[in-house]
Image (cartoon, rainbow, N blue to C red; front, side):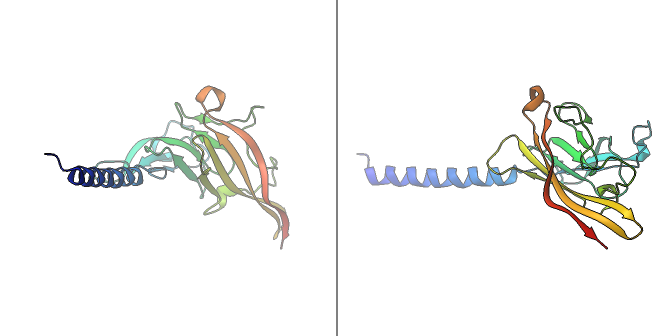
Length: 195
């Protein structure tokens, strides 16, 4: 004769084990920050492997390995974001966004603008010379939207600057799944005089 209480207990144990395995599997599958674009200088489009490369920590032993040549140039600060499976999506140096989704290229908005930030003339001293000038954040509760926060610094004269904190929104499902900037140059902290 089958004991209903034993069967019920076995089902509870099975569900409990299943829940924990599923939860831990999800925790270990979050690999958004497993890749890093160790970029070179602004001449990174030259065919020179010493200028920069993309590395990944998504390896069986957790040790970094070189994936490809970098397409991004910067002096200092940059940032990358990957999928939860560890596939490199985007990188930015605070001036341009590089799209590694499907193929490496500059990302644009719907008007084919590539440069982020309000100023595009000689006075811009943007996040390329900032140790943490850009930061990626996946929008909570979204499968396709990403924020890129960046710092703008505009030099008015010696020791006189305008600074701001801004962001763009990227939709990886836009542009036929190739990704696109859907909102550009949003002020989070508007320009302030900084002496």
